[in-house]
Length: 76
Image (cartoon, rainbow, N blue to C red; front, top):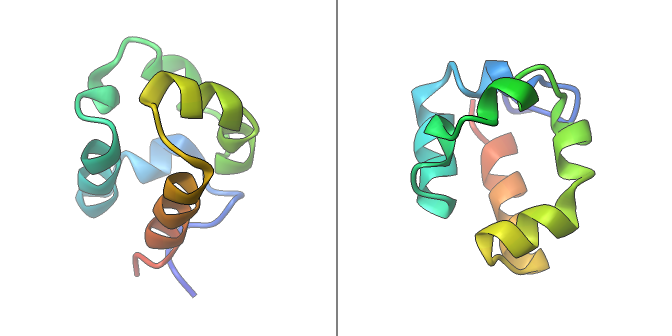
């Protein structure tokens, strides 16, 4: 089992450089976006509940988001 799951808070993800690098791979500069402060308290479940907004804002497909989640959850 990996280090992260749907109950992990975004702030915990942002404390792990491997996870930050992965996030930046999909959305360059997003970890420095002003709204990150708002979502830091979200669980990943809460954050991913905005899937349509994520897809539109980052121009990602459902498949790309699924691969991202799989990769994030595989970090040990």
